Structures are given as structure tokens and as C-alpha cells.
Length: 103
Image (cartoon, rainbow, N blue to C red; front, side, top):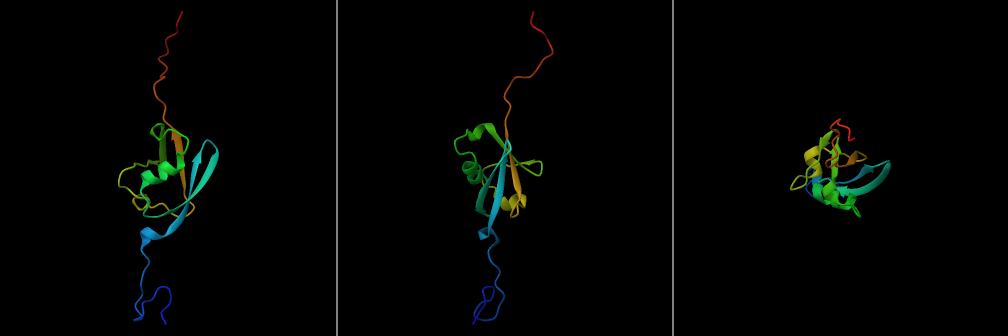
């Protein structure tokens, strides 16, 4: 009888890494949200889940200082592991201080 990681022929079978579930913590303004996802999950799907009730277009997601992009990239592209934290920041639009005072 084969074990979980062996085939019926005694060969070692490795699980598909993309299907391994991990818990990712998304941190936003001091609040943490734990999301269970597969390592092969597209980053934009994770962003959608984390940005519930918020405008996703105004949020920026970073992992270890690198900005996460949507599209076809998955968590595997960033080597995100179980228990890792993804930081969420609100994008600042405009409002630069020029140093001039209005009289």
C-alpha cells in the first residue's frame, strides 16, 4: 500500500507546490486579516479578497519592500510562505507641499 507521497509503484510523488494552502496575513492600518490561499493563487485575487469594502485602485500591496502587481503573477513569484505578512498602504494622490504660504 502506498503512502501519501508514494505511488503504487513505490515512487516518490511530490505534491504540486501551487496547490499547497498557506495562511497569509494582510496588514492594513494596524489591523491584520488572515487569508488562506493556495501558493498558486494570482496576486490580484488576493488583492480583491483583502480590499473588500475598499477601492482596490487606491491601495498598494507590498511584501518585503517590493510592490505586488496584479495580472498573471502568483504568490510563487514572490516566494510568499505560510505566515508571511503583506502590507497594504493607501496611495497618496496629490497634496504635495510646495512651501509657499498663502496670504
